[in-house]
Length: 411
Ligand code: HGY
Ligand code: MN
Ligand code: MN
Image 1 (cartoon, rainbow, N blue to C red):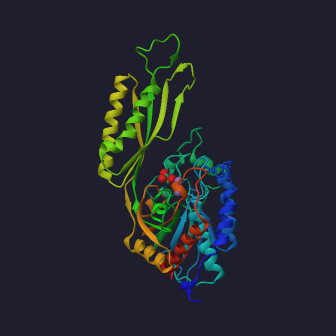
Image 2 (cartoon, rainbow, N blue to C red):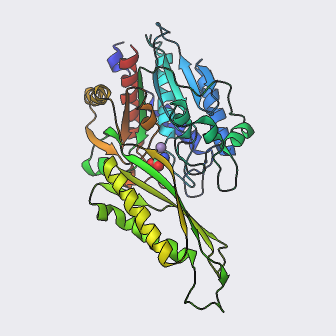
């Protein structure tokens, strides 16, 4: 058979995605599969079972990253790698991350059953804690593996209940023996849903990201003075929640104020003691700023620090701002980006170039190896929600583009 006619098994890809969506399924049709949770463990165990069924060499590293390896005729050559993440957002979607892992699995199954001879080794990977929702920052598994984050620092990162990454890896049995230390990679491809409205709006099946925006995460802690709401006059209060409210509206106004292509969001907030008849004493909230323009983000950061301190002083509620994560904007490898476009065209899929506003493990991979991504449309542009959805035929199209990207790079 002419290898150009090879296609993945779309029905099988659909059934693996549906099977994975059962793990952590929510009543609203999404998934709740937080990093290193029991649901994450179940999904990992199932992935490993499937990798073993197609005789891949399976390894788990000290960050819990899972690798499946298919030997190549020239087995000492740097491999072609592909993957994404299994963990989800709280009440997240059935496609974010898992499509990239199941897509790579489907490619491996297709290569194996057609006895394709690959010159380079081919590897599939599931990266630990891509979402960064339970444990910040995001992409901790790929961050340590690429050498961009320090392992013990990552191990010590705590969730809201004080559980640490290192302990939770141990608890679910995924603190592997292998060092989380990169090796040379010939090419890395990641299949992912777009998570935005563009592909649907332009009516294209395949998105070709030129790269990923820069991302910065901050934790803000405000110290007020709790008191009884009744006897305490309004004058002279140190209400931490009102302080936070003013700061949060400053975050929302920041992109327009900076006048560039930027988004800024406060997604998480904790109010203490959080009782209707106590003036809020302490507040912790998060800030997420993203832009392709790193210098603009530098300036935005300065504006935010100044603005927050003014509010803190005015309200006599001291604020502490911790920058906990920063990745610069990441352009992908031009040769591979062009290759994705050519293959989409050869397969008859209309494609469209864009920049990814969502973060991905490809951000870190692009700093150590030639990297490209393949997007497929998100229905209604929705993601990180239970209604996240992508057409099965678009998942299949993305899987076929991934198949031929991997075959071309591994031949
Ligand atoms: O934050 C992101 O864009 C990704 O979902 N971790
Ligand atoms: Mn993702
Ligand atoms: Mn996500």
